[in-house]
Image 1 (cartoon, rainbow, N blue to C red):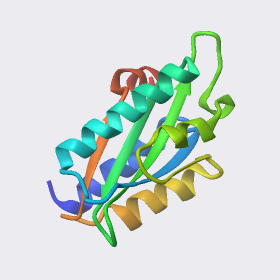
Image 2 (image 1 turned 90 degrees about the vertical axis):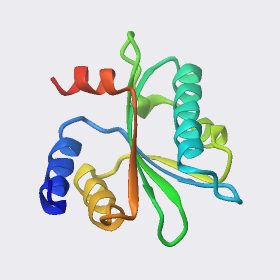
Image 3 (image 1 turned 45 degrees about the vertical axis):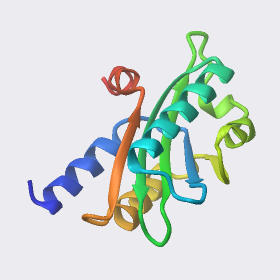
Amino acid sequence: MKNGVLFENYLEWMDKPCWQAFATLTLPTPIPSEVRIGKLFRQWCRQSAKREGIRLGCFGVLNFLPRPHLHILMLGQSRHGKTLAEANLRLCERDWIARAEVKPLESKEASIKYLAKKNMIPGRYRTFGYGEDFLKKVKS
């Protein structure tokens, strides 16, 4: 699949869920391997979801420039209707092993554009997901 088609598919996919938060996670020094980063990302998602009592769905992009870091679109909801927008996002920040910033999503369109156009440079990024079943359920 050509990069342009792949990029358009990502844009279309990212536009479907009702994302509630946007996170930027820096990585500790020395930079862990990609496999370790994926494990740390999933562990952070599990911790945040458990503490807040919500199901969590995330789409993350690991960008290698200028220094490796993660940008993440987040969505969460409990059985009782509590959403990630009502969660204590400062505690989510504290769960990460380095500097983290988790903010309520102000503009879905601007966040997706920033994530896709500024961070998904061909050959210079990797994607990570968490809660894929939850995201599929929310999108349908």
